[in-house]
Image (cartoon, rainbow over all chains, first blue to last red; front, side, top):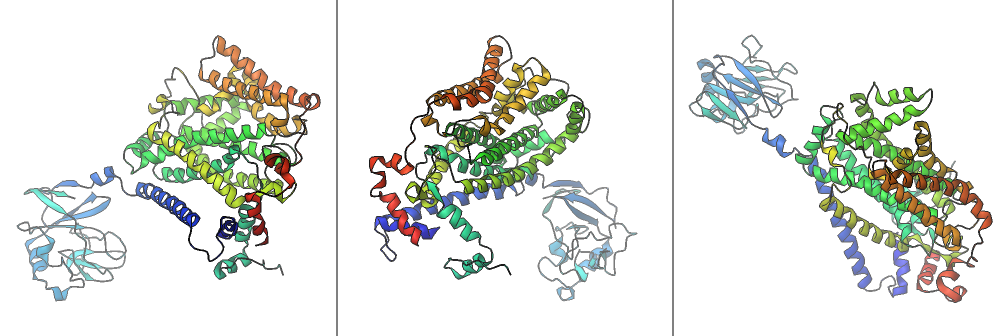
Length: 193
Length: 425
């Protein structure tokens, strides 16, 4: 179509190779104006697909820890994802603290047990309960569940194993269980998100 | 072996594609150099405008469907969530709802343009009939779309309109139950209306494709209603009419945006912001403004079946219009009596629209009946006779002669002169 345009232009004195003139300027301004306007209209459409403010606002839950017995874990739903909240035994805490980074598959921060829990709340581990391999939910919240060789969680899908700090110790999962932002509101209550 | 297309495109990549799938040649032929009568006025913008509105409707509709729930307990709330929570949901919904009104404004002007300039006459009968099909599909789509927000007007509008079909003898009840999927407008109705509301726009695209294809066979009509006789009567579609259409689109978008941003509920009924309640009928059930003339026809007949038949008949009569109008002259410019009667018809349609908005009492009943009577008289009696009785004015020799004055055959002005080198290129 550009061809017909330039071939009708000679009437206005623009042959091929002629200098840039007023007509070319007007064409450019019009075309770029339309392009910018069109592109700016694309934004509302894309933006409408993103999570809306009400969805984001629902992104925090409060959990009462008091009913969780030592040695067990519960699952709560946070932003559609299962959160594991585990009341660790002293033995489990010690095992988790004694591990050095060299022993880990994924030693990247936060891999030390002290970085994965809140100070003075050593017994509470809060992790996102999604296997980092292909998104299954690992077993191990109940003492009767298979917990794997390292006593944490065992993923039934492809056999990944996690320790009592939620760190991957046996593949195929590549990464430690992810952490979520949370804070203790009282000694026995946390708010996730 | 079927031959490869010999493409003139210079760019090697585009040439490679065009050789195997000559779409670029087609675009160049149909929208680049396509010979178009040189005397279009702005009423010839409205086909392109309708196309633009349809694209806006499909785009906004697809994104709305991502947030809408076609379930009777959730539909209203999901629409409110779109308005309040979804990012730019208000823009999508107001754009879509007002887009429907804009679509009808544009298409009604497009249709009356065709009526005034005789665009339905030979050889454009099929083109016109496809247009009537488009109108029907549009109406069905708009009606079902209006049901989706599941407000009071949605619900009761759906109840009234679907009940129309019960007027037909024998199959009436069955059709109504088929539409409802139950014994009243309910969840199954909402669900199927959503499915069909999503489907029909794509049917529309298909019919429009035929409409445009037929247009490109016969070529466009023009304000003089005479066929172009040679290159001096036409201009290449690009850049002359791409520019004229672009300008029209800009003006249209200004008006559309003004409604969406400053008066988004201008065409809406406040009652539709009340959730549907099957136990309470609103005091006044009014369809969307674009259905008002048909609603008025329906109510101006005291008999149920008669009213329904006339209402559907008012559109069906358009199908046979090319054969009802017996005058060989197309443009109303050269038909002094038809020209006046066109305005009477337009007035009758506007009166019907106003009547449809009012309770059928007193003067409104009389006005509705007179306008309905004229509508059908116009098409069924006046047009067939007028072609034989009316003495048309002399037609100009050619478009260029009429447009350029006496020197029509003489030196061509800049536009046509500029078109010449292009024909060689």
